[in-house]
Amino acid sequence: MKVVILCGGLGTRLREETEYRPKPMVPVGSQPILWHIMKLYAAAGHKEFVLCLGYKGEVIKEYFRNYHWNTSDVTIRLGPHPEIQYHNTHDEEDWTVTLLDTGATTQTGGRLKRALPYVQDDTFLLTYGDGLTDSDINASIAFHQEHRPIITVTAVQPAGRFGDLTLDGPQITSFKEKPEQQTAFINGGFFVVDKRIGSYIAGDETVLESDPMNRLAAEGQICAYQHPGFWQCMDTFREQQLLTGMWQSGNAPWKKW
Image (cartoon, rainbow, N blue to C red; front, side, top):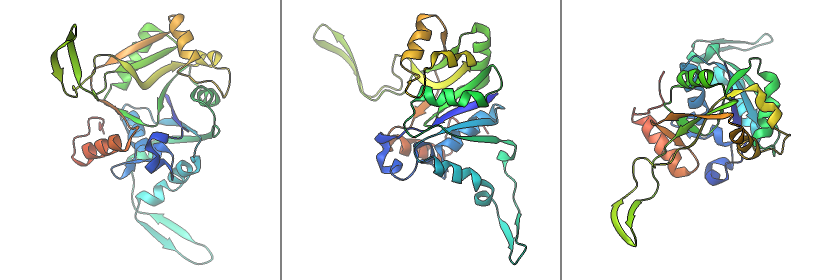
C-alpha cells in the first residue's frame, strides 16, 4: 500500500534546526526523523512512498539521490571511464520513493491532492513528517476496511505537558505533575485514506484538517482507530532531544525493525 508523507511545512517552532533543512530532515540520532517514519512503515510491509515536498525540498531530494553513496563503503576507479563499486547492501534497497514537489506555500490538503495521481490503489496511508509511534499500522488498515469510512485517524493520548488538577468547587483535591497521558484523544497523524478524499479538497489553499475533516465528520465518514500506546511528535527542540535520547538509549518504542 502506498504511503504518502507530508514533508513541506516550515517547522517554525523548531527554527534552530529548520533554518537550514526541512523539518522531516531534522535528525533523531544519526538519521532524519523521516527515515524513522519510513522504517516503521516498511517494517509493516509498506515500502512504496510518495513524499510531498515544499520548503527546502531539495535537501530531501539530495538525501535520497545520494542514499547508497552515504550508506556504503565504496571503491572509485578514476580516469576516462570512471567506475564506482559499492561494497554494502542495506535494508532499504526494495523501497521506491517518489519525490513530488508540491509547492512552497501549498497547504496540507493541497499537497495531498497533488499526490493522488501517484496513488494507484483506492486506499492508501498518509502521515506527517514529524511524528513517531508504535501503533500497529496493519491493524489500523484492518479497522478501516471493517468500518469503510473515507478517513481513519489514529487517535492517540500524548504525554501530559502540564499538571492535572482535580477540583471540588474552588478547592484542589489532587495534583498530578505532568501525567504520563492526557485524558483526551487527539489526531496522531497516522491515517488510512480512501481516494474519495480528493472530492473534498478544493485546491492548494485547502487545509486538510479544517474544512475537509469537518465535512467528513459531519457526514459520518471519519473514524478513529484508538492507540493507547506510544506516540510523540517533534515540534520543539526539547521533543527532538527526547526522541534522540530514546533512540540512543536503545529504548525507542517505534523501532520494530
